[in-house]
View 1 (cartoon, rainbow, N blue to C red):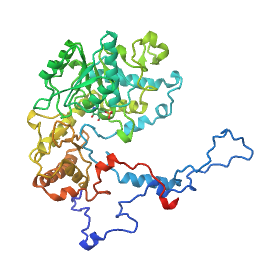
View 2 (tube, rainbow, N blue to C red):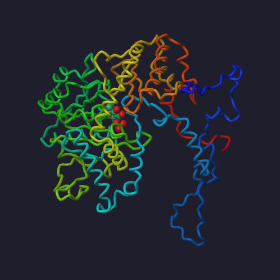
View 3 (cartoon, rainbow, N blue to C red):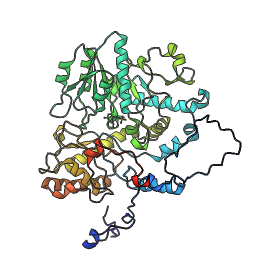
View 4 (tube, protein in one colour):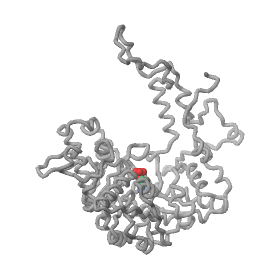
Length: 524
Ligand SMILES: Cc1ncc(COP(=O)(O)O)c(C=O)c1O
């Protein structure tokens, strides 16, 4: 922030005379310490290498049997310092949770505590192999079992399948459990009901698993229309998939009534638990009648996200669905021994498993991080996490509702995310313009145009990690942009003006991406 500190010192950027701004191009392409970077193919050459391999000794047998490469490999060769600089320069053009607030609603971009990183790097966890004899990895199995125990306790469910690798993968796992349970009773229901306020992966998962997806409308206050849902239940409905808290940032207060009605009609209840971070330590989904729910460890339990690391989406299951959970799973036996239960013993120990989701047992690195997070917070700390996440989101909602339209503001407090629409903007100004202007202010934009139930949606999830000072800076920037948007400031259409790249043609980038580098014609 370009603001004075208490001593009066201000890290200001000097004003440039206009004629210099116009011609501020540099020979290097860099602008001050904002460094330009070419593609790695443009920097590297085929005769450079960062490693020093010994020549094969004369007479050494060639064991490639005719498979040796006869043409140049076509990869750029760089020395180690060139490689390090290339990726460091690229990373400096990027924005990360370690730079500042990352308010992407529904994504829960929160700080990855360094303690968790330290634990995950312990050689007993980081250097083991999934095919090692079980006796040699008992500590790792203990981590899986202990994490599973915590997830079962926190959700009030009966068991947990730990192997799914992401939220959407967990959804598929839960739906396959539901299908296996229905098949076991000879029931071939074919419809899954998905409310409008559900996350997009929910209908995608149900369709991928072979179900017909039917929409259930939302009420004016942004929640599932209970009446419409119960009216649609019947012998063809396998179940419902409900995101709770939902993508409007609201808690589905009728969840228990919904579950009772679905069970009464012979179906199952899948809950998208990606937003569990808003209720952890306060609400146990098992008490709401839920049969299956995934937990995104990278959201609620702070493990690295997206490009920062592989996801993990354990699925907690009710007693009715537990027999169908996939293999393998980690178990603690009555005599205290720990074991990964695999196909060899499945016939005796877990005969109804629907199959398996992954080759091995799940994301060990995420398990260790999540357990470290849980143990370092304790039960009271986790309760505070959800309280602070909700408090921060409500602070954002109430601080901006006088300049931005908050369609569900009157519905009461929001949960972990604040939702605004483009309703107050002057004609011609879009949500995209506001998001791009936030980049000029030094912030990653919020989630845009989602959820679909709100026009020009802006979904802001500050998470519990942000201080009041950080939130105030973000709110001040967004407030000033919202005022410009409401007044119809045409310069918003030009944003971002200060980022390493200006606005790209997003349609062309999506429809006609050029992802492969080709040798320039003149170099051939
Ligand atoms: C509500 C909700 N459901 C499901 C998912 C899918 O999770 P994943 O990205 O881990 O597959 C997300 C992802 O952010 C989500 O926000």
